[in-house]
Length: 418
Image (cartoon, rainbow, N blue to C red; front, side, top):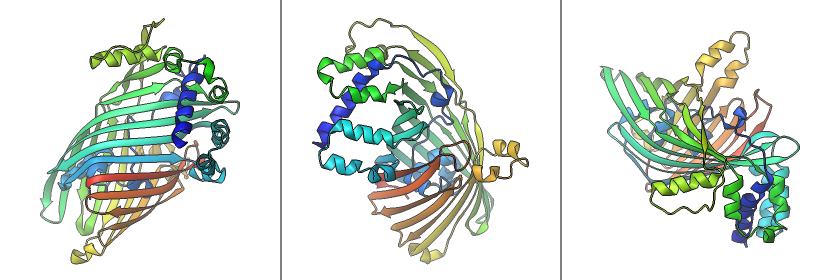
């Protein structure tokens, strides 16, 4: 029954697109990302999004490539992460109970739409990755799916985003005073392919449940009526660490250098699908396209400079029993400097901070704060399998307190990552 509901919802999304005639691609608020691509890490989110100076393994690719200089070994085959937004509202609304009890999909869909916030929001994100780090070198392949919503208080629209990235990183350590002071330098290059679907009318989705018989070929209908925008970027991140005595570290990362996307917009997604299939030698599946043309557009992603301070406790043999760490990050310090001193609250808007307490080298307890929003999490390390969970709030508004949304992330790594 669960599978039937999911299939019905997916088909509803496809066929409802025919009721959505206008395009949202010219709305920069929706389709201008602030970063080229960043997977969701349950560990990092549980620590308030902080970790410039403390992240290691696969997280080092995206947080600070200079951390690869610790030369630690990690292998993920694969890492799978799922993030659900508004989980408290979903539970309070009884949507999960409704699914298990076999309620009508149309009612469940309406209940779900009623919990979404106005403006742009997130519904579901899935990250799948494989990565390898050793001797200062790192390589990873990542795929991320995101389902967004845009609610203008009159109606709700849904649109999908997909990122496919390959990341290559290198970190080197330069000793200044042996065992006392050293400098790490790292760089990560991340060719990224980004895909956006045009927005799909959600009220049309609901109406299609009763009229599915009138749409015998929903796939072709989708490919005809929904446009897509897709293209490439070649962003570069550069990181530096100053390693100090007693486990302290000061970090700086310039990220999204050369991060602009060269995109192509297609009025019919089927044209794009046929092109992608042709690249891999597969016959086209979209019949009789009316408009095979496309237009080009550049999506600008500004570079940013982040600063971090971290501490990882080192107590010799006692590290196997107790190992604490602290992280404080200031994101976009250039933007922060522009706001000060006129806006004394700007510091909170750019601050991420977190703490982790690792027990018996197996259990990690985490907490943090991100733009004034709290986060909590736990990790379980079973050598070949690692499970991390985080429950946190994200501030999606322009100011702290405008629109806080809760989220739950679960990540499972098969391999070795410490």
